[in-house]
Amino acid sequence: MKLLKALYGCVQSFLLWYRHLKSSLESIGLEANAKDDCVLNLNRDGYQCTACVHVDDVFLTCANNYVLDCVILDINNSYNETTVRRGDSSPYLGMLFDFSEPGVAMVSMDRYVSDFLKEYEVSGTASSPATDRLFSVDPDIPLLDLIENQLVKLHEC
Image 1 (tube, one colour):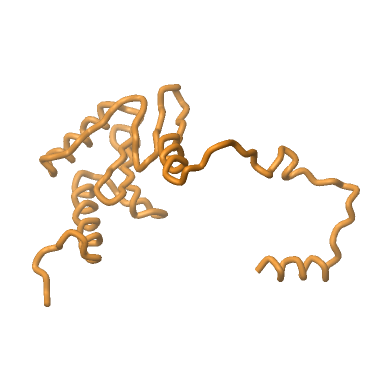
Image 2 (cartoon, rainbow, N blue to C red; image 1 turned 180 degrees about the vertical axis):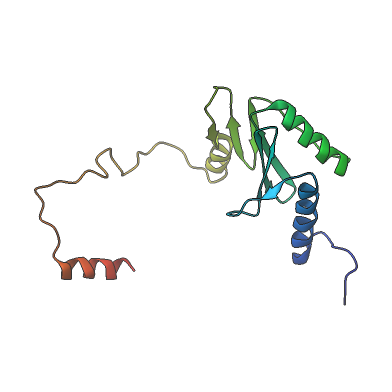
C-alpha cells in the first residue's frame, strides 16, 4: 500500500513534517545549523535569530525585537494558525526559560520535577552524595601504577 499523504502517527509522517517545516523556515531565510538540524539560524540586520524545532514547537530567540517580529510575521504567513507567546519568561518542552535579567538566561524544570515527584509519590529530602570536594585531589596519595590503572579502566567498561 502506498500513502498519498502523511497520516498522523505513521513513522514516516514525522520525517515528512520535519522536511516541510524546515523547507518553510528556509524559505524565509533560516539555515540549518551544521551541528544540529533542529536548530536554524538567520542573520538579519546584524542580529542572529535562532529557531529551535521540536516536532511542531518552534522556540525563537533574538536580541532585536524588530527582527524577531519579522520572522514571526513570515512564519504566520506560511501557517495561518500559530500561537505566539512572548515575554521575559517562556515555557518550552517542560522547561521554563527566564530572560528577565539582562544578559542572563535561567532554565528551570520546577513544574516537571514537582509533577514527577507527585506522580511517583516521592517525599522528603536528600542531599547529593557529591560534596564540594568531588574534584579535589590529595597530593599525598600515591598514583596508581600502570597495571592497576589499566585494571581499573577494564572494570569500568
